[in-house]
Length: 466
Ligand SMILES: *Cc1c(COP(=O)(O)O)cnc(C)c1O
Image (cartoon, rainbow, N blue to C red; front, side, top):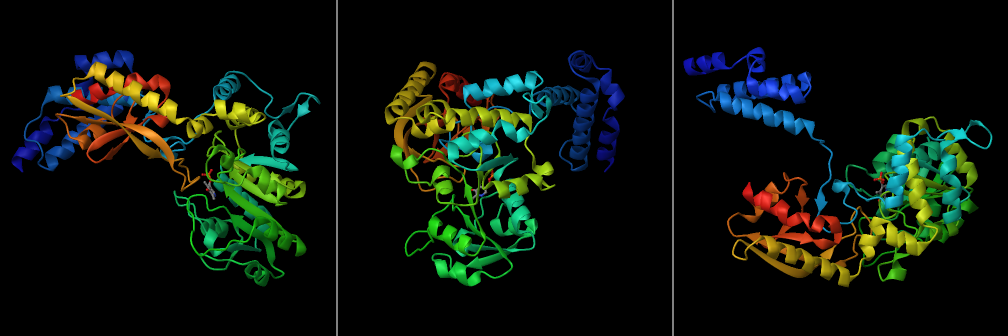
């Protein structure tokens, strides 16, 4: 007890620390309030360590070093680039879709200059922010009208709140999706004020299940695309066209939450079939919603398409103001959508599509290049390097069963455990995120950008050095 009291008394005050030369140097380069806040944090840490009996002497030198490190750490951007070596293309934890170069240029322009966000240049008066993307969305999908909100969860919420507040929404039990991050269709529906009516069973739902559930309080027949799972075996889903016909027979709205939403037909490129937005619109659905940053490969956004009378109502909902998109989203979305006028161009320029469709040959070459770089930087006895075929995933809750053949480079250091390497790689500049399998650290070259390949051996070297 006595020792602790003594130690506590020895902990310097903030003012004493501030007089130190090391700190003086820090104050030249960094704002005073940052330095003071870092000092407080480190001193507090020392105090807690003393109280817990974790230290028996105070090391002034070490305290100063810790303060310096803390300041430098806090001056760095906390949100920063990482190298994605997971092979998951639309990785929700790593920022989902990368943007195309023309999109990035558009973003910079809008950031640097004033723009016509809500100014109608033709009329010289106030305009609508949706005017920049609505005609484009209609042109690309055949929809009558369109609008965009912050994300697809917001789109689902706003659609239900506008069109089914206090009314019933009929949906199949097999489609009550949870997409992670606690977004569950039943919960969103409850919060929107709509009343959920589940019909059918998990694996089978028939048209008569919907029909039997309809009464005077029903507003919507809803379909949620089961984007992140598949129910296989003895199953029955009502085709969209039949659901639409039934809805219209009863004067109801047919609404599909497509989840990912893609304009390109993946089955034409040798992948599994996902209904395209155009196909869903052609089936006569009244309202469709989907994400901007999943398979579409644009910015985070929730796109809502459909019949003009419904879209107008959704636009007018006061809650829309709380979910509205900003100028950056609009710019990025407009530029991304424009690329879809030419599918070949879209596949070439939109990173998400490019990474999904990249050829085996290119992946093989990329893996071999990475191995060459490793050989140049490391002796075989220090780091073993192997290439093997593996599987990448699309991610983002899209094409859940699609396997994308790829090549991974597996590395194993001689003098450090693979798990320790993985941990250290999270603290390199930039951090390198991969996965461990069979006591190897695997780098899937699909999601590694070409310019990053060269960087990787140095990053690994820094990690091994500690
Ligand atoms: C991803 C997804 C959403 C939510 O979209 P966000 O853009 O992440 O908000 C909603 N519904 C389905 C079916 C989804 O797959």
